[in-house]
Length: 88
Image (cartoon, rainbow, N blue to C red):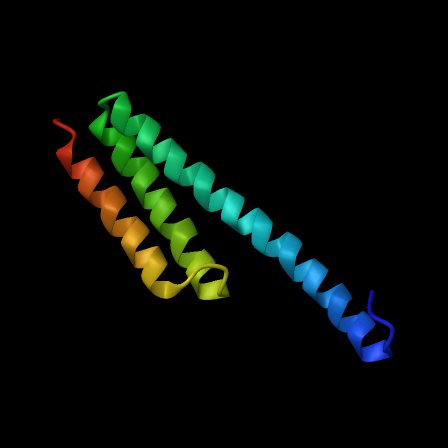
């Protein structure tokens, strides 16, 4: 464990950031799962609604630096491609 005052503070900050990042990543995973479930159910309207929600959440995660900008773009691209394959 850290013994210097600055190292103790840094450990505290890292723990706070880890928990914050974890909640954001979990939220991203859950929204992606919702989009995929809507695709499986073959409901185009529901899938589009979930996709828009997922885009917003993924972009926010990238903006906060929790996930990389290009990772976010790749996730959105792949989800959009899957939603487009669903027949109306």
